[in-house]
Length: 122
Length: 108
Image (tube, rainbow over all chains, first blue to last red; front, top):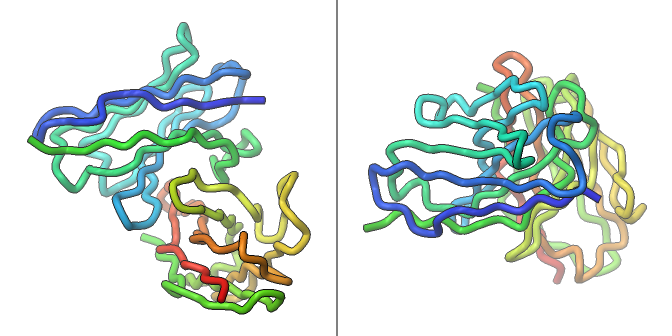
């Protein structure tokens, strides 16, 4: 049974880079599937950020593309998110997730982490 | 970019049927996925590819998709079904994920 666990700072200062890691257990990232990040601002809906395939192909939300990068660390079986120039609008619960089938298109997500809350504030 | 429109809220009495809609331009040509999210929890996939039910999801949950509207149907609604529900598609024209704004289901 695959499990995903998000980690990273709970507090980020404005203009700094928000960096999060998703540690995957029970499955090797390089074996297949697509791996994504989704966020949810307080009291609001789900907002997809980015997805990466096991082979390294990336997909980004157009509204965030200029500030976001997603990558895989195969040695640690992790994938990561970097969001540059953070603002208060980036305050949210951030989820990592894996898709259901492992073939394109990279949806739906059927395995989710528990989420990690990130606040952007001084 | 592709837009999915959901009603913000829906109220249903126990044992009745809830129909949660998701509107989009020719959405019937897309594969629609539905998620349930309870307060403080991660979303759970309840319907995949318009009408597929992942393992562990009760038969009371079903989906349909035609024309400009996809629908998540919850039969014999229970108090435990009270949650936010989100539809989702893959926008193949621009290679990105689209979520609807979500519908808060209240069980009266």
